[in-house]
Length: 309
Image (cartoon, rainbow, N blue to C red; front, top):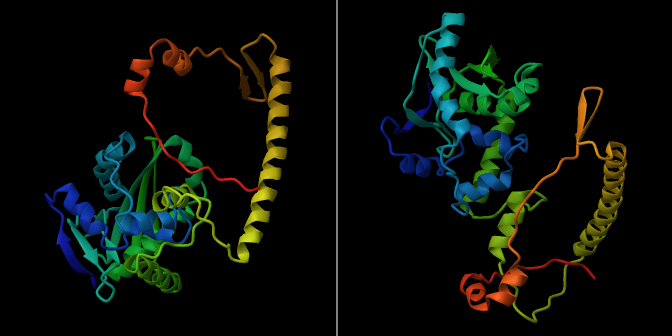
């Protein structure tokens, strides 16, 4: 192995582990940086690494069972392949690029290879039907880039009842491009330069955080490219209206077909239009009848409304 040990993780407190993870690009960050992660964007990663965004939501149910089942997946991999594996309780770093780090699941004993253990819910089963999902490839190639290993295995338990494993070989051309992308991204982190903003939730949250309130009365001259963005926004608004009309038309016609029925079926699909009872606080009545109580619990908030005139 050509990697260097950054820190040993056995019995390491979680907050210390998170702090070390922020100081480099890990395998789970690689796909997001390339724009291949369906659940995470480059902006999300940048916010985490710069400390602008809290990246520890705590252990949820999915994470809990993923950790519990990791040992089972590793043992089953050994049972089916005969390859013994062991934990590597350390955060590893690239020998020449210390910002490239890896916290691997297992290493294969007696081989220059590693093992990544995955669990997937039944809803994600179709992602694995044609083999390893594309969004996991950058993670494995990242690990091989850090360790210098030529092979990485992936074992997955799908829906708690289907086991698969794959052997992935090192792709030096892919790694070359991946390393270049990570070098450029880490430069953005070090200079605290955000990636270009886009339409993702992460970009929206960053903009709100950077510019929470307008300076009253301040007006500026926008750059030339702003006019193209205004046209893009207005076109999207018009298209959105047309799409919403089509959506509402389909819903209304289906409701008309249902009439007083709660459900309707066709070709294995169900259309449901059911009664829902909810209770909401009538703030206007509360303010009128009990103004003191209303004032006691009312909270003032400030936000910026966006519009184009």
